[in-house]
Image (cartoon, rainbow, N blue to C red):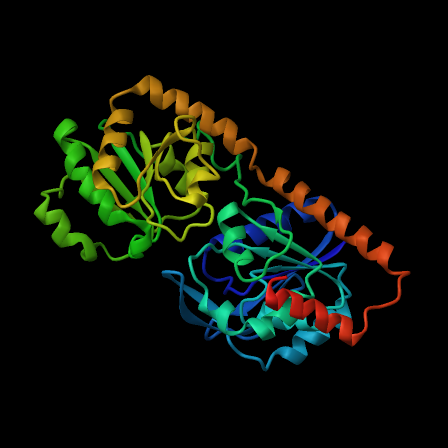
Length: 395
């Protein structure tokens, strides 16, 4: 197949959507498919096409879902997108967050291929979808297939655009994240790991710090490693008040090749997110590394981790519940081992080759359906409008 992946997000910045695209792209290249990626360019970069990755439109930071999305808002690349699609004649155009501005929207507008949209985000409300629904419904009607990465993501998009969605989750590189990866260090003290953009309040680090003060009553030398981008000074006062200075170590961002070594260096991984997580890839990374997990009981996490099987789920924003779960695991090495082994087995079900094959099978089903309808009379303009109106009205 000839497959184009379209991302709304700047490829110079790491993120779950771009990681998803890169892994599918790598798997399909191994299988002999011809793939290309279309994404925005960073400020200061020139438009480019290296034969595989095409960068069009300058990305700008836009607040979104408690985070920052770096997307292009420029409609002026429309002609270049149209020419790319006309020239390359892709079998599949796979758009990630297909209704996000502007590249997915432009690609969907001009595409004459089989269009597949993957919806990643989970949020309680999407004012963009609500306010632009009449226009977005016209684009939504051009999707031949729709994928949600989790029940939380499905619920989030289906609230505005009802219909059938194939449930295909994110994946994990089980060769990169393994229990036998040498740890970054042997700390010789009970160690808890947090990974994420800790300046974002929805990641819940403040609740983990509150919990750590309680954990310290049972384990005075407990160590919390905080890995990821952010400003530690934001938590300086909280740490000082709780006298946690010897118990917290801000590592900062780490190179991709070192991240697995931090997972294997910890006794327990903790994800205290308060919401807005459609999936929880960090849970899978810890599970693939054979580490037990303590996480907030939110829908995106519940899809990945089963309470009492691979880890413990606790009430969100509840520092006391977090502390009880952490103490329970830190005090019981046999339980940690059992949950860690179960986590590794669970993670193998999400390996990228498995996810890629499921996505490929969905492509093939859609292509067969398009071929079967090819002999039927083409849908006229009024029929297309009726489809869009049904999507807009929710019927």
